[in-house]
Structures are given as structure tokens and as C-alpha cells.
Image 1 (cartoon, rainbow, N blue to C red):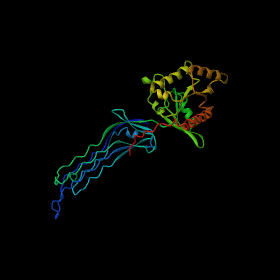
Image 2: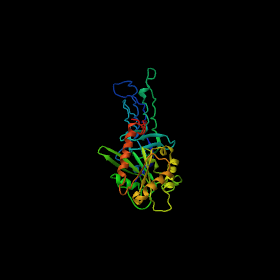
Image 3: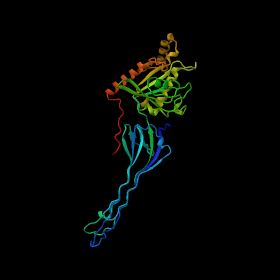
Length: 352
């Protein structure tokens, strides 16, 4: 299945039914009086998060969604029935914005979370509401209100605890394959990963976290180089970033320090909040460096990179250092959650 993380749709709620002006006409009931009923309310459009979905492909080709209109009122004091609500399902982690104003309408970050994005119009009033002691034969009635109409921008941001960041071929997908049961594509050419991949890393029987792998960044991504910044949004819900650096690049002219600093600069240019997240440096492919040179090369890279909260030296392919890395990540997430500062703020704009 293709991965789509953006969609633009138009939602049109149902109009309310019209009220009617009728009078009771029955044998042996003289001057029966007004009997026009109200129109029914139009159907609303709601969006619900569903954990069984992982892409917005359902909204790739079908762009317009309409709810049912309310029925008109009828005689004999009969009200029209309300239109049925329309329920749209999206993956967990979907942001819903007004496409015209950019206003955030809802953040569906939990399974079953709902938001009403277009309310149905109210039904019109029948003439039974206008009778009085001085107006015994009212001929007034009101039309139903129009339902809300909106153009929405849907944006999927995957839910993960930890995000991987780095150049193409830094070993991000290989690390995901090593520490989890996920099997993202791995090959010896750049941009093997074309869409985000998630893996569940089980540290102990009851301790685990979700790891997100996104396509690699390159210098100039802000100007559209490579795949640009398109997939960085999927790291905005994470609590920790792991910056993977290839410590033994095949290109002799490559400078790991310069490349690592370029990735940090691209991150800063995209979102200063994302750049401010806790970020650890993970030096990958140490198995390609002779043992006698490892310490000196790691020290030189750290000196050129600058201050870093923590660093690890691993071999994602061979598994060296991966166990220590995953346990450290799990301990960090446990401590962070215990302080109550890591959980994303919930959006209470959802409406029943």
C-alpha cells in the first residue's frame, strides 16, 4: 500500500429541512388550527482516529464528502427526520486544519478520538410555533439553515517515542532491523527509505518504545534538495532524537563532522522546536574502523561536532553497542515520562 501523509478534502454538512405551514383538516374538527411541523436537522461530518489505518490514501482520489440533508416538516404536527451524520476515519496522529485559514481544528492523537468538522444546519420552524391568541391562523414558517462547508487539510504525523535522523546510508534502516522486528528496505545506494518506517523495540517483557525511521536528509534540504523537509514532521511527536553519523564513509573526501553539523542546521531551519528536542549522537559503522583507531576517530569527531548530551558508538549491522543504546533510550524515556514533561499536550477541541 502506498504511503500518503497529506490530503486535502472538502466537507459539506447537510442542510436543515424546511418548516411548513399547514392546517388541520379533518371531519368533525372545525377550525383545527395550524399543524405544520419542523424540518429535521442536517447531518454533521465527524472525523475519527482509527489505529487500524496508517495512511491517508483513502482521501487521495475521493475529495468531496456530503452529509445527508434533513427532511422537510409535514402536516399533522409531523417533524422531518434528521439527516445521518457522516463519519470519516483517519490514522491516529492526524492533524486537521482549515485549508483556507490554517487554523488547527483537531489533533487526533489517540484511537477513537473524534472531531466534528462541519455541523449540520438546524431545521426550519413550522407554523405551529407562530400561533398565538391574536394569530390563530399563522402562515409563517422558516427555511432550514445551510450546513457548514469547509475545505480541510489533513496531515499525518506518526506517533513514535524516538526518531532517527541522519544522512542517506547512515544506517538508520539497518538499526531499525537490528533492534526491532520491522523490516525496512536496506540497500547500498542512497535514499533507500522513501517513506517513514516504525519499529517496536522491546527492551524487557513489559518495556518497549516505538522507533521511527524517516528518509535521510542532505545539505540543502530546505531548498528542496533530496526529499527536502517533507518527512521531518513525523519527528515532531518524538521525545528523543538519535542522530546517526557514518564514522567510516566510503568517500575519502567526506567529512563526517561537516555532514553532521549540516544536518543539525537543516533541522534548525525547519523547526527550532524540533531542533531543541533532546538529541543523542550515535556513531555508526565502527566495525569498519580498525580497533586501534576507534578511540582517536571518535574523539576527533566529538571535538569537531561540539557539545552533545550523550553519544554512543555502535555497529548497526553487527549489533555491537545496540543493546546498550536501547537500554539507555528506555531509561531516558522512563525518567522523562515520570516527570510528566514529555507527553504531548492533548487537544480538547474534539466535539461530541
